[in-house]
Image (tube, rainbow, N blue to C red; front, side, top):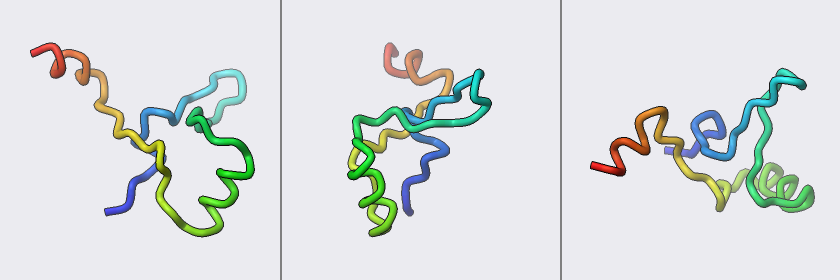
Length: 58
């Protein structure tokens, strides 16, 4: 199953721009290369949702 940016920790919503942006430590060239080659992002981390911290503490 391919990772999706929609459920990634680095996918951040910007209220001023009313859009989502990737805040992974990629420069523009790396991002373009990944998208063009269809490779999965090496920085992808699944967002655990609102209860991720609570599950981690248990």
